[in-house]
Image (cartoon, rainbow, N blue to C red; front, side, top):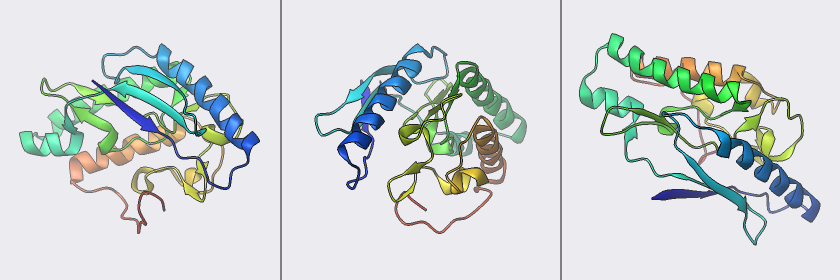
Length: 193
């Protein structure tokens, strides 16, 4: 089975902007298709829908959010940290392939029935060295495409971001794994800050 996600395109975007976002989505999709790691949900396909919205399909992973799974298993801190090291190795692999995830959070890190960590949802991923706007930047429509509780400070300004945002998010995920709550509580409206 697969999970298909369609990315939002700002209603006010002009035709040229939609075409450019589509071009960038296809470029990111090609990079994601090359990723091959045992802790990554396998990328299946991606492209542009008829309405101009980019889409991608990932392997469907049956699992629980890492924080929930650790709590359900009543794991001690040392065991949680060992599991977290698998997450770090997976993110390091993505960075070695020039991909920055940009939305690392417990909801995007699942643990399957075998206790194996699986990283998913590269919907706002960015390619290292790609300074173009559109899908490769944090700003998306009228809000920021990110999860504020796990986002690095530079993401709030819409700055061009690198691997540091993933490192910051990993620290926030580790904090949540150990403390049981995110490091920051943010007031939210829907999925946007």
